[in-house]
Image 1 (cartoon, rainbow, N blue to C red):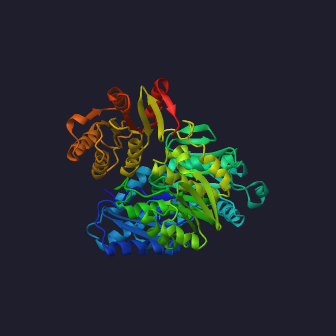
Image 2: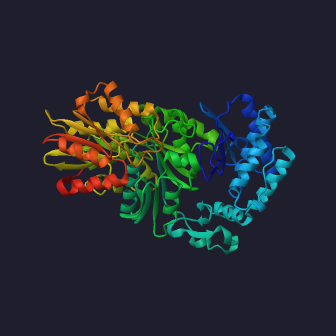
Image 3: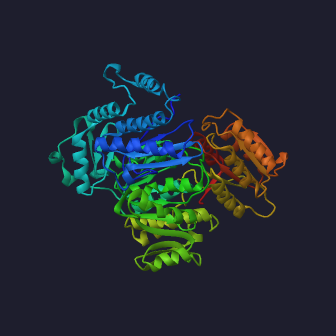
Length: 606
């Protein structure tokens, strides 16, 4: 077995640096200092031989990370050499292994050749791997020459000189964005002088990431953009790609494909892009320039994938959006999250600079916010029940928080934080405070404003919340709203499930969060659309057992093998006055649940 996973091409700002390159992850081998140093040294010599300069602040064009299951090395490379970059990384690791333990790795070259021939589209034209350094460097030189696209580099340089964003994938180059964008097939790139540069321009562009609240924040910023006159605004999120109110695609588009769809939407006048953890780790951020980037918060989720095992690593992943900011761009951060304040200091090492910062929190007078304002920075937070935005030394009152539909009478603290972060991001795009205040006074009053997130229904006297809460912090926020709605003597019922790619410890933490308020009913569900490697029924059984360990009585637990069946069980149990908190995660189940409730319930503004 080869000692590495399939190499990943990095198409933009990523966990390691701001530019393009390749990342390799080890598999099944112990990582010592000697191996890491040898791996880096081989990669450095290959990069020097190929003439690749260090890119976008990546020291020596190389960055390494170790974790409990191995290590990863990322190397910066030109955008027209990413396949070659994966070969450089694989050779550097394998040559290092054989130099350190020649007897153990005597057959490694033969394995590499066999794997390469198996993957080759045309065996006759393939250049088989070789580990001896002089021959390997010659091979890499030939691969780089085969892959090189000098016209592409010339076009990207010209776009950079003009301050234009670009978007690049395996088949297409886009210069500019939205109505000011132009697509060119890589197989037929124009000369620099033949591009109609005067017709190209950028869009006001926001990136949104974080553990919770991403989609809600995307929708808030897009609504502000359209109210400002940038109508329609294109956006992508975990629910799909949207142009104004029109859905262009359904499904999870919080990765590079969603960004490409948004930027290439020719009628768009603004772009708001959700960038989730998985897409950042697999490929990096697709867009080259954003005006503002928002990190909503950091909480435990998705540990164990791609070598991310703790909150510090997760914060670093989310902060990758800073690498896609333009020189005048602004990074919006949650001041109530100490990890963000701690890890933001590492941006200079990763990207060569720390962008302009703005901070939000529930408390407008948090010491960190007061200190930031004193230095002339922008902030947003709540004082005396009012959401206050401060920018350029001027304070703007955005309105009473309790009157904003999204806050549910001020009980949805996590949505108040989303409002504060979105306000800063929207103002960072240049949207006036009065426009933001007008949007916030109405957003959420229609059930379609924030589909699938904190949607409220009433059915036969039962208060129902449909939401996307998918980790302990998100669940606690949802249950806080449910408790606010629950009258004395009424009962609380809850759905609980998780995707199969979560660690057992994450399932345990979710169950503990659910048991904290002792609901009268928990329907443990199978998330049948997100088994992700688990056997059917395995996740529900683990959650059920964890709930019993957390003190929930067996009589308060039910088990259902689909999300819709779980909702139906909760509805059958509820009586007038009760509150049901229903986290529903798959798009198909959510649509079915909304249809069921809309036909037999009265929708309420959040």
